[in-house]
Image (cartoon, rainbow, N blue to C red; front, side, top):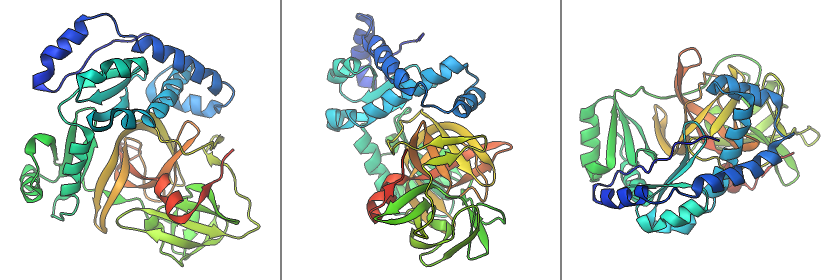
Length: 385
């Protein structure tokens, strides 16, 4: 794989250190990543549906070989995402896959981490703010309700907390009210108000014979079969009738605050361990979290199958119905009726479609509820291949 190596520096006081690092011998990270990615690719061969490769080629404008290369690097990134944050601890500032998916970047506030990161196959990026500081700033903003404030997320690539508002004045008031350091913040003024993808007649599954959403993933609670979906699709006790899913009942539902629910279906119903790609199916193997920058695809009953990339974790979204926290931000499009549908990266279940802005004609931003909190909160087991 061809790569361009760069050490990005955002900390003004660390420029001299960064220049000395860049002037040294070529980092071993590229070669190490190549070895790890080759091993991952060997495991992927024969396990990836051809329809997924076709979709990645169309979405990113790449060849079949490059699609396999992307999936392999993303697989390595997912492993590092589970290891590096604990290893670096307080200096850790985020991990992401490069736009062309041939490098894995890890941000740190400590130049002493450089050799360790390169030894793992990652390219170190020296930054000013650690991830904990940015997340603390987000936590200070989260409780505040203000007209024209639509949400926030930590952009690990830019090393900043992004606040989404209708205009700059709202952002200034919000920063002052939260008492946070303005240097931690980037303002996205003129952001579009998000909405839940909801209520449209159709086929996937119908709630109370009145509105439609989409199935997320098959799960079990002990011996009880069912599926996870979005919390805003129904309240506990609501019935599921008609559509493509088996009939059942919402057992648990949280919205706002979070956007997750699970529906129990009849004990004799078959649970499938895959996701409808509308041109085939995708097996679900696990629920390993994909890194920022990784490719991700969404299945929904309104617009079918669409792909893009993961943009940020822990997005706060201020819907008209209330704030939802802990969402993952993507540039995958979605529309009403896609709510609750599957987000999957490779063969790893990621979460359930919540809402966003835009559409699948002009493009947009879509947030999903990560699946992990639903599984752990209600003792659910993901049905896997």
